[in-house]
Image (cartoon, rainbow, N blue to C red; front, side, top):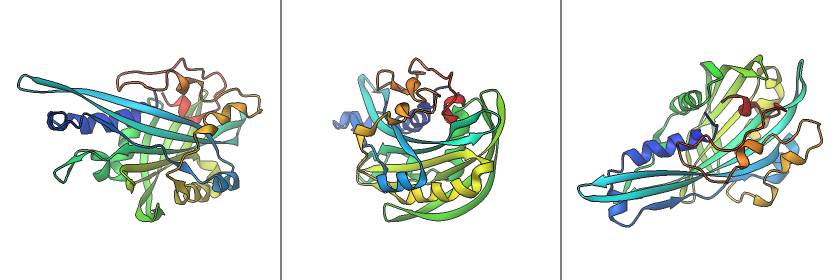
Length: 263
């Protein structure tokens, strides 16, 4: 399954619970705003913003004879970093993602389940969406401040497959924080053998999340001349897709993006 399906899955859970209420009151379209990371911290940690993807989820709901299509537009901002990956050499195997999903509410009730999902539930959803990641184990919890809000962060270990090679990875996930009118979640993944360096980098990226993502840097990663091609070709596609779509005309030959292989 395409990695965009993570946000699609989140959106679908919320839409399934609406029972037509939002459409009936004219709230049939919801969109978040993309978020990213402070450019100075990206430069300091060696991560490059490579894509801002719009992830659209649609759900048709019915109440009696009334039918309405509810549309939720989410955003996924991807960051990547090349690390040495024996025996493959330098590869984009460290990934940091910022996910935003709109808060959906009526009469004081929130319909977006992201707000109440624990890190364990979020990482389970990640595992469900990527075929080549498994044996996830919880390692430790802590707290971190994102957008001036203290939230829970958790680290998990997992087995992954990268270009046919088995690889142990760390997965860092944070519980949702409010980002203006949106909900925001961060995910960091890297090979465990670079934990000493990349764990602190992931924490720095989390703390430097910025609601003003710089769209002009979208797909900048494809210009890096490491001989490994564009790690994000499979994400470009049409720019939007529904929950059911696998999306894109993927090109995984370079193997630069760790999550690109977890499909």
